[in-house]
Structures are given as structure tokens and as C-alpha cells.
Image (tube, rainbow, N blue to C red):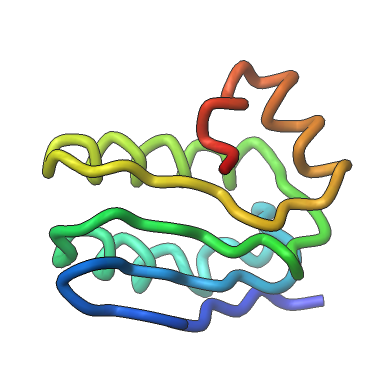
Length: 101
């Protein structure tokens, strides 16, 4: 399954992006540059909808940590919404449960 990124909302109040697929080494390059470009040009909170994310690898976690730092530098938060229990476990094991909404 490939990885896709869809913008659900992008305005001065919120950037909401839905990911679908596997955030792994094979699929991540397909969306990573677009994702970072969106994050770097947004000055509002960011919510990532993970309802259709089936797998999260270490490279995906690295991308999310980098994005979270970029968003925090702008004075906002990046949160993960609608993650499956399996994905939540990955966040908890990585010590990143604060990113979960």
C-alpha cells in the first residue's frame, strides 16, 4: 500500500492533513518533501489524521519529530488524531504520547 497525503484544512486557524498507508522507508519519500513544505509555510496548529495509517516506522517518527519541532518554533503544536491502537503503542514506546490528541 502506498502512502498518500491529503490536505483536509489549510487556513489561518488550522492545518489538517490526512495520511493513508504506511509511513515507512519505501513510501515516505513520496510525501515527505510536500509535507515539510506545508508545515514550513503554515503558521497555525497542525493536526495529522492517522485514521488510515497502517504502519509507522522509525523514519516516519523522525519526519514527525522534525515537523513537530518546526511547528513549535512557530509557536504552535502538532498533534496526531485518530491513530489506531497499534500506532498509539508505537508513540508510547517511543516516548511520544504527548503528540497524540
